[in-house]
Amino acid sequence: MKIIDRYIIKHFIINYLLALCVMVGMYILLDIIVNFDLFTKGLAYKNASAMAAFLGLMHEIVSYYLYRSLVIFQMVSGVIPVIAAGFTMVRMTRHRELTALLASGVSLYRVAVPIIVCAVFFALLVVVDQEFLMPHCIDKLLRKHGQLTASILRDRAIYFLPESDHSLVLASRYDPKTKTLWNVRIIERSTSGSPIGRIMAKKAVWKSRIGEGPVHGAWLMSDVVNINDREAAKPSETPIPIRHELYYTPLNPGQLNLIFQKKAVDYLSTSQIAKLMLYSPPATRIALAKIMYTRFSQIIINIIMLLLGIPFLLTREPDKLVVNMFWCGMVSGACFITTFVFFQLAGSGLSPLVGAAMPIIIFGPLAIIMLDLLQT
Image 1 (cartoon, rainbow, N blue to C red):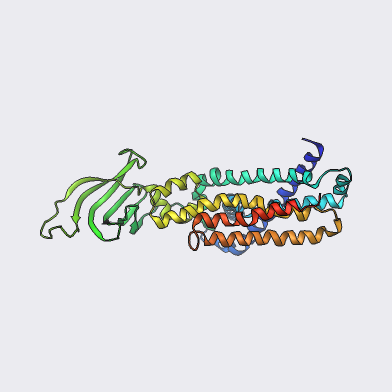
Image 2 (cartoon, helix red, strand yellow):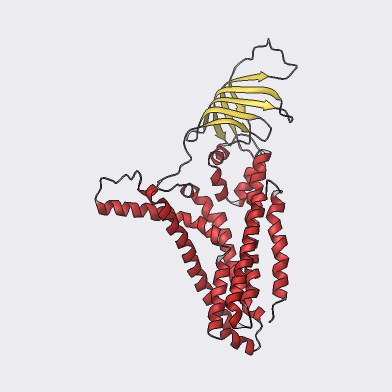
């Protein structure tokens, strides 16, 4: 690595960290101002001394935003490299360092290489954040302002939950601690949606390590009654209750927890989402596919945004740098807004793959053309 590479990388990293601290700090500050009253509601240490109450409040705020910073980093990861590159080029231009490099015969492409390499490295940090850090602290990320815990382990009722085999599941209560469904009703349906049978049970307890294949578990149902609703069934026949029966289904406690906390899906790793897609109903599968495709597309878009901005920042005319930075912000903003629109259309107006790929298809070639037109 040459001296010029180390010099550019050093200043780019410093500017990146400064921009990161400013962006994250501004977000946290505005969020605290808007939601400060939520942190002070229901404090368990109201009767404590003023100092103890203050320290308790500060601990709660720091604990909340410490984990929330992982999500904020994902949100601002695209614009920070552009800002860092802009400040780096402004510094080099102000000190006439860029002019000296051009006078010595160094191409502007050579100046851009260390910045692009660093941007790719920081894009990999986004992958680490999404795939390894956030999936291990989902409960912390699901916390609301002033909430000490956000446990998903609380009783819930299940109403007409669709399964991958078109059946509907109902239960008056689901206890996630014991993994038990109470007063279970399963409406079996044909591919056209017509009811063909019912399974009723007093309760169903999840038993792992039962059966073979990717499911690896089953619901052990008690006091089971099977009712045939097909046209050929005889109404006069009285179904005989079964004391115990195993019900094999892809619907497991892990999926139920995710369904009850839909926001948790955004914090899952890609491998976890892929496993969840295997046994999800079609509508849910489309939403999960959107999350997967847009996640990969966003990483590429972050790099493309930098490539779009670099031609404006690397200029032979220092007097035009301020104007060029304005146009850099406009083009990067257009890329950001367009990406947001296509991501929103993915899974609804467009297929998840098309919606995630369109920003890359539009701005990828544009970035290459702009780099090729750069006067080096």
